[in-house]
Structures are given as structure tokens and as C-alpha cells.
Image (cartoon, rainbow, N blue to C red; front, side, top):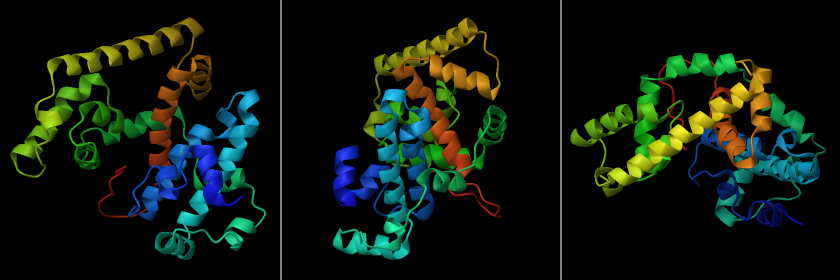
Length: 257
């Protein structure tokens, strides 16, 4: 079975870009971040024992998707003809995909997250990300608040002010979803966020957890699947941000999704 068929079976999509959740015009960095985020959701280490074999298969397929899209020649062939060179050494070589993954992405700690948040909030990089999310999601504040890193419902007035200023200055288009959002929808978003924050704090208190990395892992494992997914999505965003860091000068690129 070819890679495209495997993708259809594992992820419900035969389009390699769709599997990673990125645009066809995505840069190498965007493809790398997309791969990282999806791989965190299907990584065998995060799966229940009964699902480990299935997660491993999906993880391996995902590694091949990234290998194709990160190889200039294979990506060009796929873009132009919609096919994958199944006989390429990139796909046929005996590769340990988990070791390959760990070479690409470093592990982060709770302290890394806290340090990053201090530097990121109110930074030029955050400003670019807010504007990018606004355009990507056509002004949908639910999706914007889920997309921008390190924000909670208390940040929403600040986020809205930034966007409104950019609209007023002509830097951003005016989307109805943002301008005409009802108070009911905004209040519902706030209630959801408050409930999730309260549940997370209750879980931490019930388990007697602190702020260490092992404590965070225990908290994630104690949650039901929906709440675990929420925490995993946040960690995926943070790890993708760190996994893509390299030493360079000048302006940092946006983490546009």
C-alpha cells in the first residue's frame, strides 16, 4: 500500500499537506511545525496500552509524510504530479522514526514554558501571531483565542484591542465575525475558559501536584480524554515553538499556522 493510501486510512486524508494541517504553499518551517503538532497527538508515548500499536503505525506514516515534504525533490514531484516516489531512499531506508523525531525536536520543561511566556507576551512576535491568526480565521475569536500562544480569557480584551487598532489603521481587513460578534458568544467563550481553568486547578489540588515536569505529566494522565487533549494541544504549540528555534539574528518569523 502506498503512502497516500496509508494516509487516507490513518488520517482520513490522502493529501499530505492536509495530514500536517498546513497550506500547500507552506514554508519548510511551517511544515516542520505542522509535523510536530500532529506527531504529538499520535506519539506512541501518549497512547493508552491498547492503542499503542495503532499509534505507532500512525506515527511512522506521519514521519514518512514529513520526510517527503521536507525533501525538495520529492516535494516538487508531489506538487507537480500528485504522486510519491515510493522507491526513494527517503522512504525505503530502514529508519527508526522515533529516533528521527527526537533528533528534530528537543524536550521542553515547565520552566521553559514559563520563561517563554514572559518573553512572548506583549512582544513583536506575539503581535505578528495575533494578526496572522485574525486573518487565518477570518476574525473568529473562538479560534483566535485557541490559536495564539500563552493566552487565556483574561487576555481577550488586550487581544481585541490589538486587532481593532490594526483594523482602524487599515492594516487588517474588517471581518464580520469579529466586528459583529454577539455578547452571548463572547460570554460563552469566557464561561468555557473559566470552567476549564477551574477544573485544571481542582485536578492539581486533588492530586497534590506542584509545578514540576513530573507533576504536569501526572496531571495530564489523570484527566479524561477531552481535557487531556486540551492540555496536549497547548503543549504541542509550545513544543513546536521551541522545536523550531535556531540561533539567528534579525526578526523572528511568525508561527502562523
